[in-house]
Every structure is written in C-alpha cells, then in structure tokens.
Amino acid sequence: MLSPKVETALNQQIKMEGSSSNFYLSMAVWAEQNGYAGVSEFLYKHSDEERFHMLKLIKYMNERDGNVVIPSFEQPKSDFSRVTELFEELYSHETAVTRSIGELVGVCLDEKDFTTHNFLQWYVSEQLEEEALAKTIMDKIKLMGDDQSAWYHFDRDIANLTVTSAADSAQTN
Ligand code: OFO
Image (cartoon, rainbow, N blue to C red):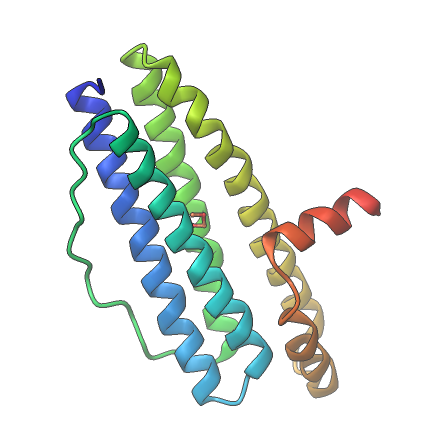
C-alpha cells in the first residue's frame, strides 16, 4: 500500500513526466518545421523517453495498488525564436525535473516508504544523465556561436544522440 502522501507525490511526477513529453514533442514539431531535421529527431525521441518515464511510474503505482490519476496537461509552448531557445528551455526544464524527483525521494524517506525509494533510484540516475546531456548540448551551442557549418554538423550529429548513447560515450572517454 502507498501512503496518501507518496501517492500524491507519484501522481505529481506522472504529470511532470507527461508534461515533459508534450513539451519536447512541441519543440520537435517546431524544429521539423524550421528545417532542423536532426534536432527534431532528437526531440521526438526525447519526448518518447519522457512518456516511457511516465508509464513506468503508472505501472509501479498499479503494482502497489495505488490510485493512478491521469492528469490533464497544459498546452505546451509552441513558438520559439531560434533553435538555441529550444535547448535553453530543455535544460531549464530538466533541472526542474531533477528538483521534482529530489522532492519525491524526500517524501518517500519522510514516509519511510523504502520500496518506492528504491524504485526511484532508477529515476535519480536517469535524471542525472539527462541533465548532464542537456548541459553538454548547451556548452556545444555556446562554442558554435554563429558558425553555420558547425550548426550543420550539430544538426546532423544530434539525431543519433540519446541519454544512453551520451552515457556510453562518457564511459568510454
Ligand atoms: Fe523524465 O527525465 Fe527528463 O525530464
């Protein structure tokens, strides 16, 4: 059984993950409409990953006989001034998700729910990788500045970048 506080916090995280998925989907659409095929592919995949994070929480709550609430989502922002703005938003969104997972872990400890705490360790490490990836992308963007040829290569290469691939290459470097 989940305590009411843990149940509420898990449902809030379900909303957070679903909102992330929609936000990145909206970014992917903008990128595709504006000629950034690689960036859009990366964002479509990222959107799918966030949906997977949401589903994993839903399945866990069902396993624990919790009361899952599928929330309504606010319409995500759909207009961006330039591709740099997408990644600024993505980075800031990921840091907000990191805080939200930290709070959720805190609730589990307060409630002495060590099973959920254990389950959430996957999210803690996944989130660490996602935030690091977003930061790496921001660093690259700063280095590229207005260099159009660098942007061409960035758009080509980012299509193959995922959290998992970034973590693998960090391990082999
Ligand atoms: Fe769900 O990990 Fe990013 O937001």
